[in-house]
Length: 52
Image (cartoon, rainbow, N blue to C red; front, side, top):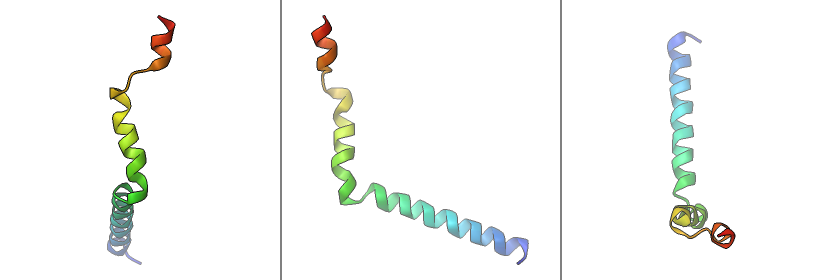
């Protein structure tokens, strides 16, 4: 294989990985976890309030 073919395969592998990450992030299974993580900064920290 020449250098151009290897670069093409590396580009293809990077694109497939990118699409896989996008697919994972937008899948329905992850929605609940991401919504919970998005609310974390807005929720009160009950442990800190009890120490006061």
